Image 1: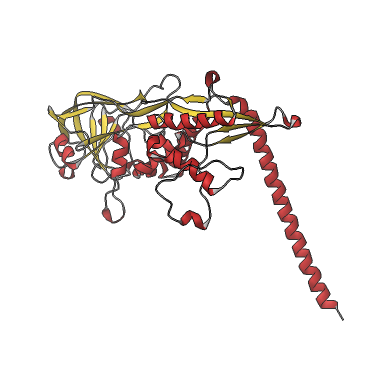
Image 2: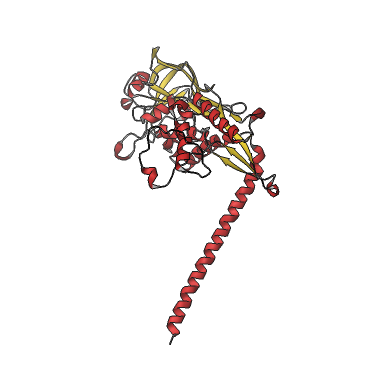
Length: 390
């Protein structure tokens, strides 16, 4: 059997030893035929060492980590199964975020990015903003409160609509405006600004501002339709409208606004790589068959989950309803699936393994049902014997 191995998996030992405090350093020990805690510690301490720089995809540490794994594959005699006769499989990873040059002014006075305003990207069908803004001398207008009285869509055309966020239980501000069914996205507006910057978790704001690792877009981007969005502070809202929005009537005209931003892609500082090798088996009857062992040292999946962990509020942004959760799952799954780009040749085998696994589950279920039936029959026989014994 041919066994294709991709990278090394992190193993957590489910034993009392796992709860013990481990030493800060560990001297590498020779590998033994048996899998031992010491052998695992040697591998994990090497990969987790500070010299590996975290091994994050698209960073120098990922190159160092994959270089080490490829060297071990070569030392063990595995055959290269990557690109151009190497062990490496490059994944088209980029950093996505706000491109340089983002700006916003009210009557010519600049508002500060991060302190006064933060651009908000499109997130599937859950958050229907477009990823770029180009507004020159447009009028700000008070659009009301999400969930309350709001500006009519036809009155928003070509304007920057400033909205108060919805109110939750007890009248507290709910920063999750996207989950409110009454939210209007104003696709014909020059922009939509929601006054919820202070109410938003720091993790969400940091997520919006910091570049995030992602798989590069394949093919041209679809035509963007809709309005760009942003979070603004209460002070910025007063500057945009010329007054506290809580004192204004819906439709009240504000200042003249000029703004621009764009979410885009840029190359990562280093290649993002998988390591792929082949270990030949010795059974001639199984030649041509193979099993795959895959672990995510590349961390494209980790990058997707890290985004949601750091975002805090972004988790809720993508999962505030069943629909939103499905969107998040699809995006993360797509990121994870991209790790396997270039290994299409194993797809058929994986489907066979999947079918075999499903058959095993069915067989196990049938065995469990049979065992329960036999157990029930045994109880009945025992009762009959007890009833009729002399």
